[in-house]
Image (cartoon, rainbow, N blue to C red; front, side, top):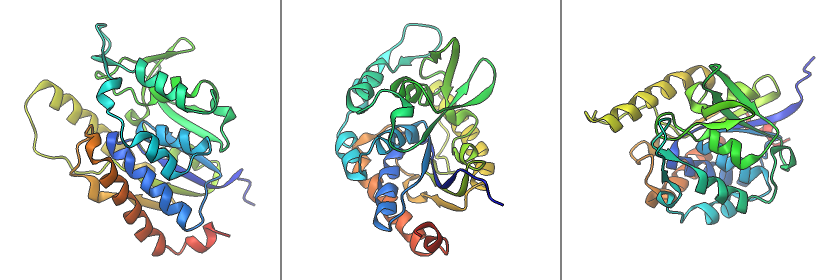
Length: 260
């Protein structure tokens, strides 16, 4: 007997600006009549997940986020724990989300982060959304860890960049959208590039097992040439997310089960 609480769970991976592909993927799911009963997001995926779970459509989310210059949200941090801080970004989230706490969202939501001190994943299902999304987005060494309830949290992608891990015990079917392609460009021998490459290798490796937990996996390969931080390509990335997701959905035997 299947006692799982939810029918369809949707996992949205991390991926920086490539997270705009999640918006296109959501539009494709809307077009075929699939709406998740629960959603989990990590890093960029946690941003999109929060707005979608709050009741915004894919188009609404793009209209809000698509023309943002992310550099305006990045503040130099003079502390020893990171180069940048996300205080302005947190305020933007608080201003534009219609509710304050995760438990108030219309769709049950999990925001994945990493407890850097105690070395384990954290599935936030309650508490302040903006604070927990900021924690989920805090790439180690780049951003200052976020302190929540006397613990320090960094990017959820450190341990599970595709948060199907959180959904599998709860859901009959899990759809995974991976916007962090498994291909790296030529290596650059400077500190910033090497630090980011090390992080990317880590997330690419931990996502392998989490892909196996998905009943339907959308690996959006065509966005791998786009820079992680270049918002100028937002529309193109979202379009690629839509078309690649739609292609996989149309060829999946699971669609009839998921849309019942």
